[in-house]
Image 1 (cartoon, helix red, strand yellow):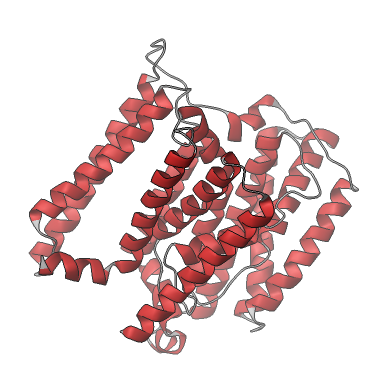
Image 2 (cartoon, rainbow, N blue to C red; image 1 turned 120 degrees about the vertical axis):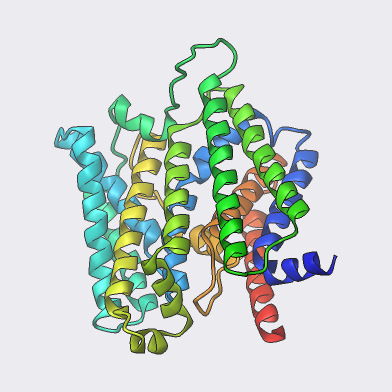
Amino acid sequence: MKTLTKLFKSNIREYGMLIALIAIMVFFQWRTDGILMKPINITNLVLQNSYIIIMALGMLLIIVSGWIDLSVGSVAAFIGAIAAVMMVKWDFHWGATILLSLLIGALIGAWQGYWVAYVKIPSFIVTLAGMLIFRGLTLVMLQGEAVGPFPTQFQKLSSGFIGDVFNYEGLHITTLVLGAILSVILIVLDVRARNNKLKYGFEVTPFYFFVVKNVVITGAVMGLCWLMASYKGLPNVLVIMFILIAFYSFVTSQTKIGRRIYAMGGNEKAAKLSGVNTNRLLFLTFVNMGVLAALAGLIVAARLNTATPKAGDGFELDVIAACFIGGASATGGIGTVIGAVVGAFIIGVMNNGMSIVGIGIDWQQAIKGFVLLLAVFFDVYNKNKS
């Protein structure tokens, strides 16, 4: 029992937010009379929040580095506008449009990263300027009007579903197979991580807790896949999200560049004295954020089948809130990919649940603001306590 208490205290951010997510889902499942967990609503929940989760992955690295990016909503809108103009007015191929849009996103990230990393202008100022610049350029590109529709292939980026190779009527078997494969991979990775800790003498969780945790995770994965399989299967955007989450989890926990980002956020001067090129590293985090914001902009445009001047409005608030609610520290150096994803789902479930029960957008904003404040207070309180 003491071991479990110690384990929970040492991982209070991660476990606390996961418990909060489960509690919120149970509450809204009850308040919505079971609508929340219906397959069609789960699919809508994924589609509605995919862009927030994707941008949260990039924002997490910036926040861990000790900075922030206020421009992501405007950048997403600008990229959506560029993509719309290229496909609708300039008759570009949808594939070339996606590649060029991601490249433009990288250039935008590089432009902002240069001012922050090398000129040493605070990121708050640089990205606040970027928020205004790219919102204005969005209006210029669209000339104040919506542009669309888009080719069917481009729309499938957000609204499409993976095919079923088994062609079984009434149940998407491919989704269940992929869910089983993912579950096995997660278990194998967890076993390897546990064995490595034992090999080098690190403390590990009790075996029964390890088994229960993997059973719960497998049950959650297969339960989600079952719900999806009973509807249309896995959305394309969910597959993209899984790949990105796995990639960034690996980068942040298993690679040298990931460890250096955390070191830079924890103490930039110490990291620099240790030989880390902090300027280049910070520059690359903004380039990465630009690419992910561009991808999110493409997904939003594909989902709406049109680019509008108001697209991306307020996205930056939800993205930043997702990271902080998920356990990222406002002072840098702390935060996990899974935490950011959990934080994004907390916001998404709250938005979806409150909309279903009829809570107005005004109270939704107030409640989300209160939750964000509590999350940051929780971080500060635990830091002072330790």
